[in-house]
Amino acid sequence: NAGVTQTPKFRVLKTGQSMTLLCAQDMNHEYMYWYRQDPGMGLRLIHYSVGEGTTAKGEVPDGYNVSRLKKQNFLLGLESAAPSQTSVYFCASSYSLAGAYEQYFGPGTRLTVT
Amino acid sequence: GNSVTQMEGPVTLSEEAFLTINCTYTATGYPSLFWYVQYPGEGLQLLLKATKADDKGSNKGFEATYRKETTSFHLEKGSVQVSDSAVYFCALDLDSNYQLIWGAGTKLIIKP
Image (cartoon, rainbow over all chains, first blue to last red):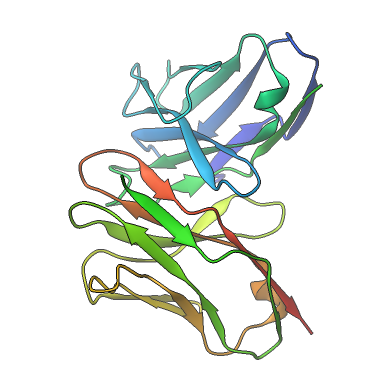
């Protein structure tokens, strides 16, 4: 049982390049989330999904797109990376609503945009 | 608006010391409250939670009591170990949406 996995673990991009971060969970969770973590700011929600084929914006969605084509996968895309997107990105999943059920986190992806 | 405020870190303690990490919140309604922990190089994991006033969450020797009158959820442990070194996040959830609202995190360093 792998839980939540993220690919890649590290990435360096040049400004304007694009990339996709992959999140996979094997717990059959309905809800999935993408966060970014910046020093002194805690976690900020980028996008989330309440089920296969659905996505919604979180607190800081600009510059990111997401897709949930399969229940177990949640992809985060950066179409044109900017230095402000240098951060650590965490994916999480939960069985149901955030408060009622624990969120399970992946190990994170450290992204640097130069 | 809804928010969570944690004490700034890092907090540095010696092994076997008593730990308190303060967390206060502002929220409309009746939130659930959480402490998550992030060990070095890992993702966050739930440490404990409380869903209503006066509830006490506990796990791995850590405790926190949901105090509605002071809007607080302070994390405590009677005797810390080097292995407790991590970043601790306080968070709240309002049933009205899917989002957890996070504090900024408090880094805890335990010296042997």
